[in-house]
Figure 1: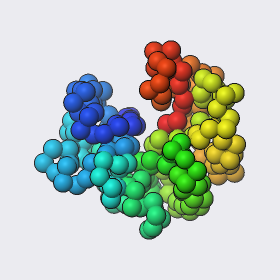
Figure 2: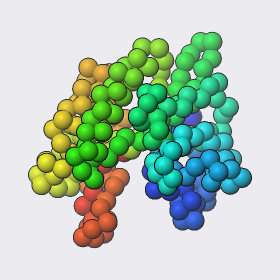
Figure 3: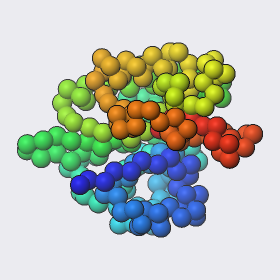
Figure 4: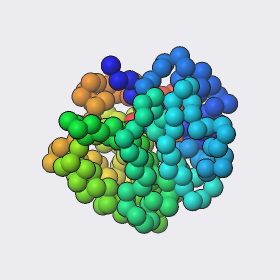
Length: 226
């Protein structure tokens, strides 16, 4: 069985000081997708190229301490694709695809970090541009290979995916346009929300992000964004 894990690290240096490597050694995944590496190549060199026996493949942001994604794997890939749009978002370090192709089958594992629009209208517009480019990219990829996307999507799709859905309908991450994009991706786009396939009725147990405000974690006032 191929064991795959996905984590938003909120900084690889911070995560390793909090026990990431011990956690990986205990769980023994074959592959781990991470988002928000928040490091550059020079920071990774000599320290984070491999974790718990898994070799990393990275897409770094140009801006220091920002974004960045990686896929760590025990198995040697046939190819690694870094970036997807050749422009605005490739500079932000948001996409790395690790391919495991054989003559009989084409397969990929992809780590993607979607933009957040919560800081203001400018970033929300950037998020919409990202969605507009990501959808056709995934559709083109679907026409040529099998793939698994592990991602911090920064979108809660349904009411069950966040605690306070009524009060968040005008907030980034739960806007109608964002949710409609997810619905399209999972219906006519033909992708599957694996978590919801396995846990169709989960609510409070599904959250992956909590605000730093108002004891949100202690009260489990969360969102499923990943």
